[in-house]
Length: 168
Image (cartoon, rainbow, N blue to C red; front, side):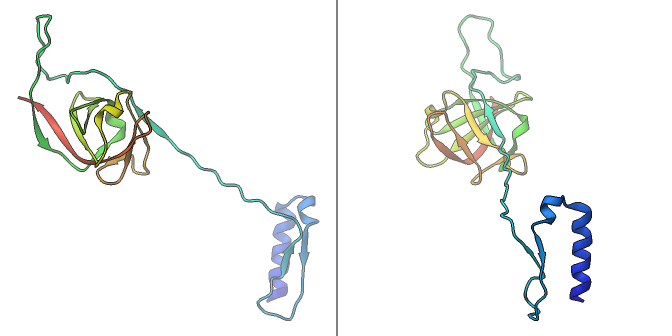
């Protein structure tokens, strides 16, 4: 059985390995059933490839598409009502961000929907004056109590909850 295995390994090695690599392979016969049959003389190195995708939400001053537009030069302060929304947002649908009040960050989607993200303990919205960054998670979603938002100031904040902002 061990001889057959050694012949198979040698056959595969001869067809798939270069001559330099073959020179570093030794076939060893031992009486120990747990000893390796094939030993390699060379040094092997491990290569690890990591890929990170960083998503940037630029800081913008924006008004949602369905907000009333003022015809006068003086901007109208729009009042919003908050509604519950799910615990995750698709990152691909986010278009921009701006700091909100004290501990909130307002996110704009590509559809013109405004969403308020409440930041975790100790995080201030003013740290996100230059926008927000995040590492793209495996599922492509920004989720509550899981993902971190990064600011250019070095702040790292979790999101406690999301709320949909609807103009009154």
